[in-house]
Amino acid sequence: MTGIRFFNTLTRNKEDFVPQSPGRVGMYTCGPTVYEYASIGNMRAYVFADILRRTLEYNGLEVNMVMNITDVGHLVSDADEGEDKMMISARRERKTPWEIARHYTEVFLDDTKRLNIRPVTVLCYATQHIPEMIAMVQELADRGYAYETSDGVYFDISKFPEYGCLSRINLSEQKAGARVEVNPEKRNPADFALWKKAPAEHIMQWESPWGMGYPGWHIECSAMGRQYLGDQFDIHTGGIDHIPVHHENEIAQTAACTGQPAARFWMHVEFLLVDGGKMSKSLGNVYTVSDLEARGIEPLAFRYLCLGAHYRAKLNFTWEAVAGAQKGLFALRRAVQKDSKEDRLRDVQGRALSHNALRFREDFLQAVNDDLNTPQALAVLWEATRSGLGSELLELARDCDRVLALDLAKGRLGPDVDIAAGDLPDYVRALLEERHQARLARNWKRADAIRDELAGLGYGVKDTPGGYQVTRIVTPDSH
Ligand code: AMP
Ligand code: ZN
Image 1 (cartoon, rainbow, N blue to C red):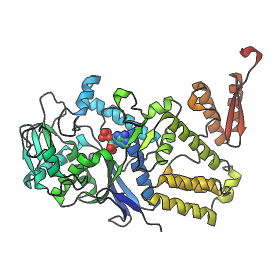
Image 2 (image 1 turned 135 degrees about the vertical axis):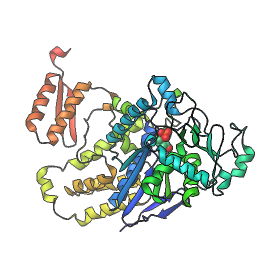
Image 3 (image 1 turned 180 degrees about the vertical axis):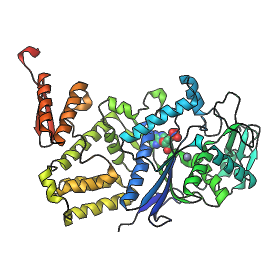
Image 4 (image 1 turned 90 degrees about the vertical axis):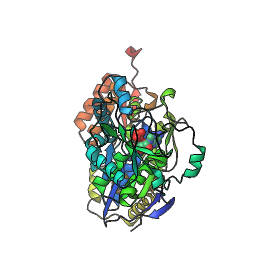
């Protein structure tokens, strides 16, 4: 069997991955802060975590995947200053933070579904785990790692000499270069809040040994990770922005209680850029999955775009790039589905794959097991489409799709028109799609009825080996 190797941020090395309990993997993924719509940048992080989980499962491992929803405690600044992001959105939208959390969580989960990101094993909400967080802060205080100030309880990083091990920050340099300290009660500039005392107007607050307040963002993940996965688990994931503060702090908190840095493997996904730069509200380029769909891009085309880059490389999003990814995805599906006629399928089912097909499967496995090399994995599948596998190609693609999740065997093939150019009315697209689905289901009667309906609307549709072509029927009265 091909061994699995992952790049571990903790050691800066690609290492052999072997789960600590044979056959079973415990994995924690930092979930979204639900105060606004998740951007496609955020979604890149969850596509990555999903590919990781699917790859482990493809290797026959059972994965216990835990993800949190941050619905309290994530402040505007990572230096524990400013307001809770939930409160700002609540004020802006004249809703309670609870309503804000519910709405944005629902939309987030819906977006993940459209990207074929499988539901995690345990989805845990920060607001439902306050007692566990308080207990962990208390444990840190009892062990001498925490101190109380007028506005909260802080972790004293000078008590934890390994602080900085993940990002390899040199704290003495940081101290010397530190700008004016915002909170004079902190003992060290990098000390961080475990618990914040709440001002009266703060709606989300709970009783604690330090008065009414709410948890710090970092303790949330430490407490929930520990509760569901134990003191030491296999993998922890997040975006690269989590390395210097959030994950450094998580490691300090957990290790101070347990002696272990929570996870053995820390894996981080690089950023998605838009037009070569950072996404930002002021530039108006913070796109969501719904924005993609509004422009005729199916969510899985974005997934395909993500898989075309290695997760540790920056990925630049442009509308041209995602339209190109969609074309590529449709072409791959066409190649895979062209031999999907049932009679041919019957040939293959129940028969072992030929040596040729197995070789592609092995190459695919090797690619994903090599630190999730999805660009290489896609290249293997493309090569397979050109190698005369016949109806076995569909079987192979179905198998690879357990990891890729691009609906290769059943997804839309797309019309042979430039749909990104938006030159078809929505109702025509809907009919074309319905006809395509009817044909896939071999419902010829329905497919023909739709073709007649389209003709009545002035659109001709011609089936081709790779999909279909749409033409505008020009009649004397259409001028
Ligand atoms: P947040 O909701 O801000 O906590 O972020 C959710 C996840 O998205 C985290 O894992 C971040 O690291 C990740 N993330 C945020 N922006 C981007 C981006 N532009 N590209 C990739 N991942 C991102
Ligand atoms: Zn986290």
